[in-house]
Amino acid sequence: MDAVTLEHHHQGTQMKSHFPRHSNLPSLLRVLTLAITVIAALTGCSAVATGTTASIQPPKLVVFLVVDGLPQRQLMGVRDQLAPDGFARFLNRGTWFANAHYDHAFTVTAAGHAVMLTGANPSRTGIIGNDWRNPETGAPVYNTEDPSATYIGHATNAFDGTSPKNLKVQTVGDVLRASTPSSKVIAISGKDRGAILPAGKSGTAYMYMAASGNFASTTHYMARHPAWVDNYQASKPADRYFRSEWTPLLPEAAYARSLPDNQPWFGPGGGALPMAMSASTDDAPSLTFYNRLMRSPFGDALTLDFARAAIAGEQLGQRAVTDIVSVSLSSHDYINHAYSAESRLSHDHLLQLDRLLAQFFADLDKTIGKGNYVAMLTADHGFMPATEASTAQGLPSGRLSSSQLLGRINAGLAKKFGEGKWAIGFSGPSLLLDKKLMAAKGTNPAPVAQEAQTLLLAEPAMAAAYTRSELLANQLGSSHLFNALRQSWHPDVSGDVQYALKPNWMFTSATAIATHGSPYDYDTHVPLLVYGPRWYKTGQVDARVGIGGIAPKLAELLGVARPEAAEAAMLPMAAP
Image (cartoon, rainbow, N blue to C red; front, side, top):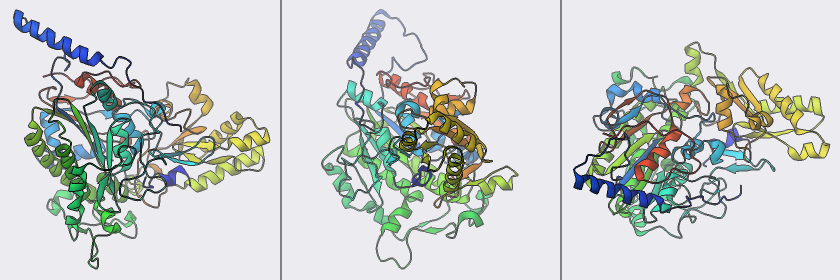
């Protein structure tokens, strides 16, 4: 089973959590800031504007939103059809970044979710993909797997995510809780990785269970759910969508800019609206029904409803400390994989999500108070157009079989180094060589890696390939592709030859007609939106920024140290 196959599966040594040595420093800074403010008031002096939020009381709640698989081009393409207070709240009354990008090459869900709140690229987080192979044994590894933990109230299968054990660095939430242990960090998602990685080492994650339509945590976090979870689940909220249909939000003419339903390349099942959530012959909700919900706007509605329950149950933003709630909305990614971001189904889903966000913000305004929270929204990656759509535009594109590619590489290596399966398989965005075979035959690994690199570069679909030696030397910094691939490569986790396909090429998949995972703009360029008028000035920022800049900016907002591994520049945001 190679990494390309594992990519769409439901889906090390445990590292110690790293916290600032002087965990009381942020508290002292807040006391000094307050003292300076009081002195200024008593002496009639005015505070000096610094362009930061350091002198403003932190918000009661940080609401961190992720739309899985939303490219910036798609959001901008429907801006004229947005409701007044969903995405438009950010675009019209917040700070938004027109040119926000990921810096790493393998833009997949786990890698992106690990970057956002750590400020570190996969080269530091160790989360190089959704899955990879153990470099020594070749055994598959899932990014958030941990056999020592199980789902609460649900079966736990191989490659289910249950803890942040594989995350090698701290999040801003970890720093916050080290400084203020009474602060809470709660993360919720339709995917295990979308909850566990933003929750960090010291937060709590809840994820959607397709077996029941409920959200659950794992024994890594607690022995049993708190009462508010049990009470919420007892009403079986997912079941209210049984017999429901996903129907278009707008008249047919509004979708003329998108590809019509039932494209021939959608596959045997097609894809069209309206779409029933259950078959007419179904007597009761089933696994098929619960799976289908997460691939529709109803999945986002369920996730946001559970977030409301978490805010109420944990009293987030309603106590004397700052809390963080992270909500990763997974449905858009599933829809784009099945139909592409250019489809009418994806177009309508984005508009449906827009209205759901407007309702969520209205509820936050009532429960937390509009001036008491900061909301941030981004995506874990963008999306490549379907190869058929690219071909129709005259762009070189295509699909590559990973198993056939591996066969050609092994045939070439055997021709030069003798009989044997020299390449075990693909590990994230790299090729993993068989270290045991090389040791048994007394073969130097460096020439094998160089020959594998040569074989990869001979492929018409391949854009770049770099060996472990080249990546460790890090002397090819003038190449954008090299830098992006280097940021996706971790020496203790990754394979031996890191590669990238050419634009508009993808690996074949039994479950996806479109995908992501490249260093190109359609995958790296994502929305980055902030709303909090009390803390940040309204306006558009056109400078290119890295998504990793979120973590240090949030740390500044919260008055805590930036996460130790954070490497990105802080987002350039001005105080009001």
